[in-house]
Length: 205
Image (cartoon, rainbow, N blue to C red; front, side, top):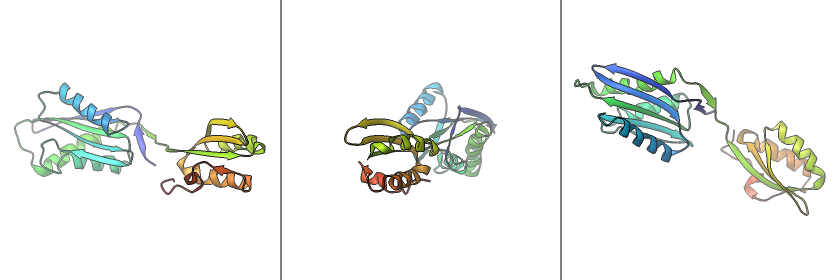
């Protein structure tokens, strides 16, 4: 299960007079991450590098910002992956101290900046939801409302016509089981408005 962060966490390292200011924080997407990186550049106009790594929506990105290739962004990203984080941006602002650290030294510095910040982090589980839409007999409406609670799901919308049109929000991990329960209870009388709703999601679980 992926995790996000309750609040931003920070670190600061001084290595051979170079200053590394780390931050790890939750962001919703790449656009928000890029905006945050731009804000850091504005806050630290004298910094030599502003390196970053992002895990969001199962996608990743990393940027060395002028450091030798693979010595900053990628090591930072590996720390996020190792801790199963998602919707999270790691940034490290570096002020060069005049002494080269070498490739190995840079990898350690950027890795440690992120890892030390995360030692203080409070993680929260990320629950992904699916939206399901179906039409079922009136006789099942009360049963459905009770069944949703058992699956951690909720009713987003309901409309009454020839049948009960229901829009449901359910955790992905429970979606397949809920669909099966509804189909069993409906005995062939439940219509799914999106054919994909009636099939288990391969990404769920």
